[in-house]
Image (cartoon, rainbow, N blue to C red; front, side, top):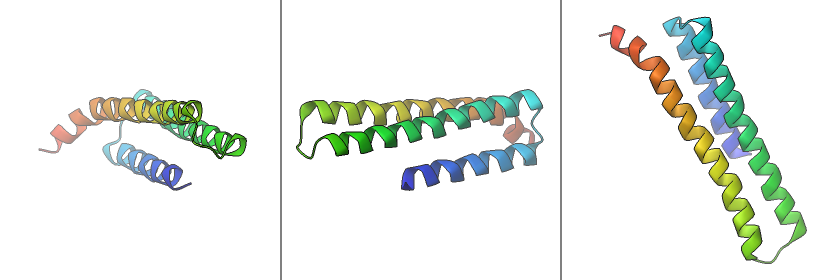
Amino acid sequence: NRNLRIHLTAALAVIILGIFFRINKYEMSILGVVILLVISSEMINTAIEEMVNLITFEHKKEAKIAKDVAAGMVLIATLGSVIIGSIIFTPYIFKLF
């Protein structure tokens, strides 16, 4: 799935940045948890979308709602991880200047 590859690439970039900035173990563990949260939510989203596609080929309101809620879960997890990542990395970025 294309979106999962995007999330994995972003996760790898975050890990590399964490090593580059030498963030502490506590911060790295928080980043690890949010990375797992985003990747897990993307996997759940994919499973829900594929299951809905197996159940019905018709455009049903309920199928759309299930897909939209699953996609919303990924969006919220991703936005939360961006906020947490910003909070963790901002002090390190400011130290460069």
